[in-house]
Image (cartoon, rainbow, N blue to C red; front, top):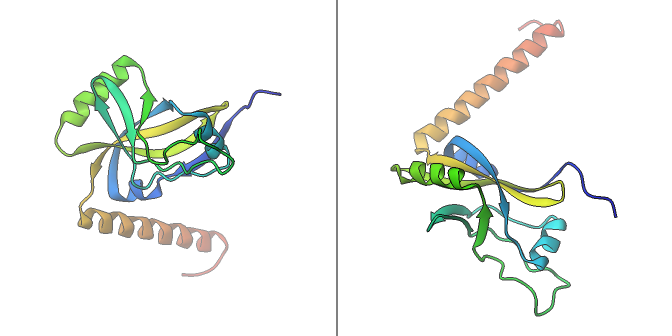
Length: 159
Protein backbone atom coordinates (compact mmCIF):
# COMPACT_ATOMS: atom_id res chain seq x y z
CA UNK A 1 0.00 0.00 0.00
CA UNK A 2 1.35 3.43 -0.95
CA UNK A 3 2.16 5.96 1.72
CA UNK A 4 -0.29 8.84 2.03
CA UNK A 5 0.86 12.23 0.77
CA UNK A 6 -0.50 15.73 1.45
CA UNK A 7 -3.03 16.88 4.01
CA UNK A 8 -6.60 15.78 4.66
CA UNK A 9 -8.71 18.04 6.88
CA UNK A 10 -10.79 16.18 9.46
CA UNK A 11 -12.28 18.91 11.65
CA UNK A 12 -12.03 22.66 12.02
CA UNK A 13 -12.93 24.94 14.91
CA UNK A 14 -14.40 27.93 13.06
CA UNK A 15 -15.87 29.41 16.21
CA UNK A 16 -12.40 29.77 17.76
CA UNK A 17 -11.44 32.46 15.23
CA UNK A 18 -14.65 34.29 16.11
CA UNK A 19 -14.27 34.00 19.89
CA UNK A 20 -10.51 34.57 20.25
CA UNK A 21 -7.70 36.81 19.05
CA UNK A 22 -5.20 34.32 17.61
CA UNK A 23 -1.59 35.20 18.55
CA UNK A 24 0.54 32.30 17.26
CA UNK A 25 -0.06 28.74 16.10
CA UNK A 26 1.81 25.45 16.39
CA UNK A 27 1.42 22.09 14.70
CA UNK A 28 1.48 19.16 17.10
CA UNK A 29 1.21 15.42 16.73
CA UNK A 30 -1.33 13.51 18.80
CA UNK A 31 -0.95 10.22 20.66
CA UNK A 32 -3.99 8.17 19.57
CA UNK A 33 -5.31 4.65 20.05
CA UNK A 34 -6.09 2.43 17.05
CA UNK A 35 -9.85 2.91 17.06
CA UNK A 36 -9.41 6.69 17.32
CA UNK A 37 -7.37 6.70 14.12
CA UNK A 38 -10.01 4.64 12.33
CA UNK A 39 -12.75 6.99 13.52
CA UNK A 40 -10.73 10.01 12.35
CA UNK A 41 -10.16 8.40 8.94
CA UNK A 42 -13.96 8.33 8.60
CA UNK A 43 -13.86 12.13 9.13
CA UNK A 44 -15.60 12.15 12.47
CA UNK A 45 -14.39 14.58 15.14
CA UNK A 46 -15.42 17.78 16.89
CA UNK A 47 -13.13 20.48 18.31
CA UNK A 48 -15.90 22.75 19.63
CA UNK A 49 -15.28 22.42 23.39
CA UNK A 50 -11.60 21.52 23.08
CA UNK A 51 -8.66 23.18 24.80
CA UNK A 52 -5.05 22.33 25.51
CA UNK A 53 -2.95 22.77 28.63
CA UNK A 54 0.60 22.23 29.80
CA UNK A 55 0.83 19.90 32.79
CA UNK A 56 4.16 18.80 34.31
CA UNK A 57 6.07 19.74 31.18
CA UNK A 58 3.72 17.84 28.85
CA UNK A 59 1.05 19.21 26.50
CA UNK A 60 -2.44 17.67 26.74
CA UNK A 61 -5.55 18.08 24.61
CA UNK A 62 -8.86 18.03 26.52
CA UNK A 63 -12.54 17.75 25.55
CA UNK A 64 -11.97 16.98 21.86
CA UNK A 65 -14.73 14.61 20.80
CA UNK A 66 -13.65 11.67 18.65
CA UNK A 67 -16.66 9.31 18.55
CA UNK A 68 -16.30 5.60 19.11
CA UNK A 69 -15.46 3.54 16.05
CA UNK A 70 -18.63 1.78 14.88
CA UNK A 71 -16.91 -1.58 14.16
CA UNK A 72 -14.83 -1.44 17.33
CA UNK A 73 -15.36 -3.97 20.10
CA UNK A 74 -14.07 -3.95 23.64
CA UNK A 75 -10.96 -2.13 22.34
CA UNK A 76 -12.94 1.07 21.69
CA UNK A 77 -11.77 4.33 23.24
CA UNK A 78 -13.51 6.91 25.41
CA UNK A 79 -14.88 9.69 23.21
CA UNK A 80 -13.63 12.65 25.28
CA UNK A 81 -10.47 11.35 26.90
CA UNK A 82 -7.44 13.60 27.27
CA UNK A 83 -4.78 13.06 24.61
CA UNK A 84 -1.09 13.82 24.75
CA UNK A 85 0.30 16.33 22.24
CA UNK A 86 3.73 15.79 20.72
CA UNK A 87 5.78 19.00 20.77
CA UNK A 88 9.46 19.83 21.18
CA UNK A 89 10.70 20.79 24.65
CA UNK A 90 11.51 24.39 23.64
CA UNK A 91 8.01 24.75 22.12
CA UNK A 92 6.37 23.47 25.30
CA UNK A 93 8.48 25.85 27.43
CA UNK A 94 7.60 28.81 25.19
CA UNK A 95 3.88 27.95 25.31
CA UNK A 96 3.98 27.50 29.08
CA UNK A 97 5.54 30.95 29.59
CA UNK A 98 2.93 32.60 27.36
CA UNK A 99 -0.05 30.77 28.88
CA UNK A 100 1.11 31.92 32.34
CA UNK A 101 0.23 35.46 31.22
CA UNK A 102 -3.28 36.46 32.24
CA UNK A 103 -6.05 35.83 29.73
CA UNK A 104 -4.23 33.49 27.35
CA UNK A 105 -5.37 29.99 26.51
CA UNK A 106 -4.52 27.20 24.07
CA UNK A 107 -7.26 26.41 21.56
CA UNK A 108 -7.27 23.71 18.86
CA UNK A 109 -8.00 25.23 15.44
CA UNK A 110 -7.95 22.20 13.15
CA UNK A 111 -7.40 18.47 13.13
CA UNK A 112 -5.96 16.84 10.02
CA UNK A 113 -3.81 14.08 8.58
CA UNK A 114 -0.45 15.18 7.18
CA UNK A 115 1.42 12.50 5.24
CA UNK A 116 -0.62 9.84 7.04
CA UNK A 117 -0.05 11.16 10.57
CA UNK A 118 -2.70 12.84 12.72
CA UNK A 119 -1.86 16.46 13.55
CA UNK A 120 -3.62 19.23 15.41
CA UNK A 121 -3.06 22.96 14.97
CA UNK A 122 -3.16 24.68 18.35
CA UNK A 123 -3.17 28.42 18.86
CA UNK A 124 -2.24 30.75 21.65
CA UNK A 125 -5.37 32.87 21.94
CA UNK A 126 -6.85 35.66 24.02
CA UNK A 127 -10.62 35.84 24.49
CA UNK A 128 -12.57 38.54 22.67
CA UNK A 129 -15.13 40.71 24.35
CA UNK A 130 -18.57 41.01 22.76
CA UNK A 131 -17.81 44.45 21.32
CA UNK A 132 -14.65 43.02 19.70
CA UNK A 133 -16.76 40.34 18.03
CA UNK A 134 -19.19 42.96 16.71
CA UNK A 135 -16.30 45.09 15.47
CA UNK A 136 -14.70 42.18 13.59
CA UNK A 137 -18.05 41.26 12.00
CA UNK A 138 -18.60 44.86 10.89
CA UNK A 139 -15.08 45.05 9.49
CA UNK A 140 -15.55 41.82 7.54
CA UNK A 141 -18.89 43.08 6.15
CA UNK A 142 -17.29 46.38 5.09
CA UNK A 143 -14.46 44.56 3.32
CA UNK A 144 -16.97 42.34 1.52
CA UNK A 145 -18.98 45.35 0.33
CA UNK A 146 -15.78 47.08 -0.80
CA UNK A 147 -14.75 44.03 -2.84
CA UNK A 148 -18.22 43.82 -4.41
CA UNK A 149 -18.08 47.50 -5.38
CA UNK A 150 -14.67 47.02 -7.01
CA UNK A 151 -15.96 44.01 -8.95
CA UNK A 152 -19.04 45.93 -10.13
CA UNK A 153 -16.79 48.78 -11.25
CA UNK A 154 -14.48 46.41 -13.14
CA UNK A 155 -17.47 44.87 -14.95
CA UNK A 156 -18.55 48.33 -16.11
CA UNK A 157 -21.55 48.89 -13.88
CA UNK A 158 -22.09 52.31 -12.35
CA UNK A 159 -22.49 52.72 -8.59
